[in-house]
Length: 369
Image 1 (cartoon, rainbow, N blue to C red):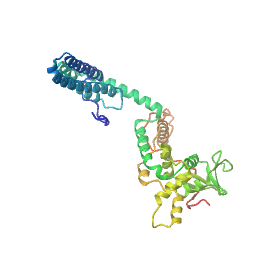
Image 2 (image 1 turned 135 degrees about the horizontal axis):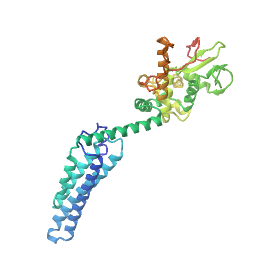
Image 3 (image 1 turned 180 degrees about the vertical axis):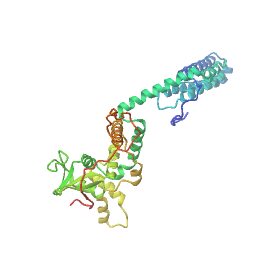
Image 4 (image 1 turned 90 degrees about the vertical axis):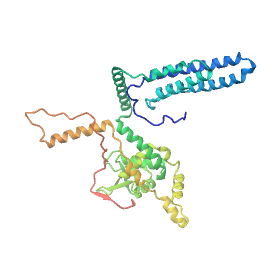
C-alpha cells in the first residue's frame, strides 16, 4: 500500500462503522489466522514426499506472502489509530485489508477460510445509542484537544490556521527579501516605537518619547529599510525622525520571524543573493551593483495574502473596548440601571491595529539625510 494512502484528511467515518478498538482487534486476529495458515503450509512442505514438494512449496510461498501483507495492515491499523492526523476511517480500511489477505492466505494453504467470519464484525452497524455515545466521546475529545492547543498557543483554531498559512507564505518569500538577522533586529527596534534618527545616527531610546541616548542601531541597515519603504519616518518638533514599520515592513518582519532559515548568514551573502537576482547581461556592472545594494520590496502577493493572527487576549481586549464604546454611544450611565460589564467572551477574529507614534510631520523622502 502506498505510504501516502492516508495523507489527505477525510470526514468522520459514517454512522454505524465499528469503533477503532474493534478494527484493531479484528485486524490483529486476521493477521494471526493468516500466519497460522502460512505455518500450516510450511509444515506440509516439511512432511511432504518428493513428488509433491514443488507444489507444496508454491503453496507455502503464496500463503506466506499473504500473511506478511495481513500483518503489515494490522500494524498500519495500530499506527493510524495512534496518529490524530489520520482520518477516522483509516483503521477500518486497514482492518478490511488485513481480513482480505487472511482469507487469501487460508485459501492458498488449503484450510478452512475462517477469517471470512471476521467481516461480520466490521460490517455490524451500531445502534442509535452506541452511535450517540461515540459522538459524545468524540466531541469531548475534540473539546479537550482544543483547550490544550489554546493554552499552548493562546489562539483559537482560526488564528492557528492563519499562523500556519503565514508560515507557508514565509517559506516562499523571506529568502527573496535579501535580509540578514541584522535587518530583523532593526525592524524589531522600530516596532517598539523607540527607534529614532538624529545627527546621522540611528538609536533605540530607552523610553518612548525620550529621543536622547539609547542603544546604537545599524545606520546602513536602517537607511536601506527606509529607502525600501519597510520603515516610515515621522519628524518631531525638535527635528528628530522616529522610525516605525510600514504596513509592508510589519508583514515582512512577521514573515521573517516565522521563517528565520530564509535569512542570509552575512551581509555579503545577502548582497550576493540580491546581485544574482538583478544581474542582467545588458546592464552596466555599476548599475547592477547599485541595484543589488537596494533591498527589494516584499512581493505584492505576500502582502495581499498575509493576515495578522490575533490572540485570545487581544480578542478579549477588543471585546471590552467595543462594549465600553457601545455603552458610551448609547448614553453612558443611567441612574436607574446598573452599570453594564463589558463582555469577556472571545469574539470573531479581528485584525490587530498597527500602532504608530503620533506626529504632525510625516517624512516622505527616500533618504534619512
